Length: 152
Image (cartoon, rainbow, N blue to C red):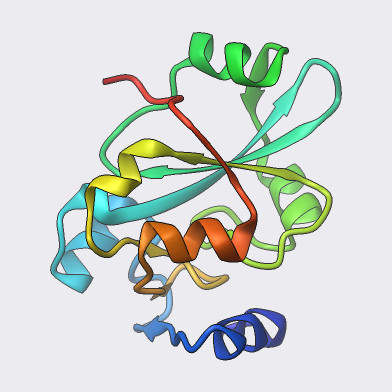
């Protein structure tokens, strides 16, 4: 089930989510196979916590790993992946279904690698969904800052 506030954001931007059977797209690989796209087109949203106490939502290609050094350079602090309970508390979404739309009070970092694709697919708030969007739409809706934080 897509959360109501996510549906409202999508409707306001003329977008709609693809929905699948529960638990079918919790990883980038499974989501890509289910949607029929490259793994890199899956825009995974991961929460990181800085040593300074701040949280950062990183939206990035599903086929790459976050580079710790680049994250420190972008955030000014050493970061670690947020725990599942932290992710749910801060974003309102469980890991595997974190949606970049409607997350308040957290800086959103959009990795430039997503711009390579004509369409990308972030989750819509659960582990059985994807939202077809362009990188420009993602940037406009989230207000995210474009960065290069992946290992390439």
